[in-house]
Image (cartoon, rainbow over all chains, first blue to last red; front, side, top):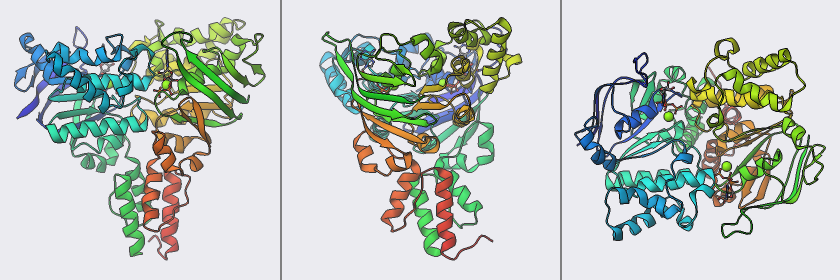
Length: 278
Length: 290
Ligand SMILES: Nc1ncnc2c1ncn2[C@@H]1O[C@H](COP(=O)(O)OP(=O)(O)OP(=O)(O)O)[C@@H](O)[C@H]1O
Ligand SMILES: Nc1ncnc2c1ncn2[C@@H]1O[C@H](COP(=O)(O)OP(=O)(O)OP(=O)(O)O)[C@@H](O)[C@H]1O
Ligand SMILES: [Mg+2]
Ligand SMILES: [Mg+2]
């Protein structure tokens, strides 16, 4: 089933439409896909994400989420229930004065039964490694701790589509690993559709599909490996190669016969093969 | 100016039911001239520690000296200290407030350098804006809110470096920037490091960034410094770092995998050095570039 569909979508923050933050985007995301969205600052990624869960509605064109038109106000509730979003800046996300209530807010809002909510809170806080902070006050947490709570709040909704807008930017490496592992697990085991906006090229490699935005338009769409093999175009979009791929290119330039590598594992394997051949 | 912390402790909301001890005895020396990295799990006390360095958080336990300033002394001149120790917060662009880029950058100056003439101020603001790689004439009258994420970050940094602090502290300065923006920001920091800016301290969750840029680093865990040294030494201790909720750079992960295959790469874990060491090994095996 088609989870998200954009048909010639334009969005302008300006009354006079003198500039489009999203400019004539058409795309389709199937249920169960894991899509990374890349692109320079200001290229329209967050705007695109907000168009999916009806926080913004298109200036022209049409966005549908599981067949529901986001411009139809009667559907907004149903759309938000199926598309959960974690924002970029954790500071403005906390709604309650204790963590537990904060995580419960989403599920309560969509009418999850009381008995079930407790379980969801447990599951979500465990997923982000914050089970010991159930009764803490969000305002008194560190930046990364707040971000984990925000992610737990969306996990607790168990949305069909999860949109992560640079949600791991402030997390420590273990937090990043844990959140990515949970997201991948929900994607694999529950078929949750994942849309991951990220500036970490290594993180994008974990997706099966990557979309590059530039000046509001989708300029590349393919597997992450495909996108990173077009390294001359990357610079135009303010992207860089994953570090392993960069090293790989340097080795090739030095004359070493070595195959493509994008991750540490692939690079080690290629170096091994190349050295043993020599 | 050398930074010396001894037994630094700090508790948020002391004597209340919500008391939480963020620093539990930090011992750390940062020499002048370093490009110093601070890493550590979420909530380990990094931000709390660095905010002590320009007295944004007042010392409440232990000792702290920054150059000639003894922060445990009542007589410490905090205003002067703050003009010499610049602090760029996490997501500093959220603190931009003025109507124009020029006014925003100027604000930092007006606070600390009251003795400057109007002309001197304008010159200093222009220099700061140009140092961060922005076009002064094109942007000075623009609203900072109309800039891109990367440009806002640069304006916020300009507002801090406008006083030419000897020590510049940046709390996760590259978070949220696009990959090229990150690289450019690091290049910017290296370009001012060693001039009027003697010491740079960055807090980061990006192990690769620390390996690529820092001369020395400290690892925080649960309110204490648990490891300190060159990144090349710290990142050799993979198991310890994993147990502290951290990671090792991509190059270090690759080196570990190669070691398991009997291939030793003696690298400082920067990408360029790693590539050089691997190709040297390949050439030693009797291979030559065509
Ligand atoms: N609330 C707003 N009002 C007016 N313009 C906006 C608003 N939010 C974003 N914009 C503009 O729309 C464009 C796209 O912004 P968007 O936030 O979607 O970019 P992004 O790709 O998410 O960038 P980043 O990587 O910095 O988060 C930019 O030019 C931005 O300045
Ligand atoms: N304003 C505050 N009130 C109460 N406790 C706080 C406050 N700020 C931080 N803390 C607590 O102090 C400890 C250290 O927080 P700090 O912000 O220094 O961590 P950090 O290492 O910078 O983390 P992060 O990587 O998430 O930014 C944490 O346990 C946090 O919950
Ligand atoms: Mg964004
Ligand atoms: Mg912090």
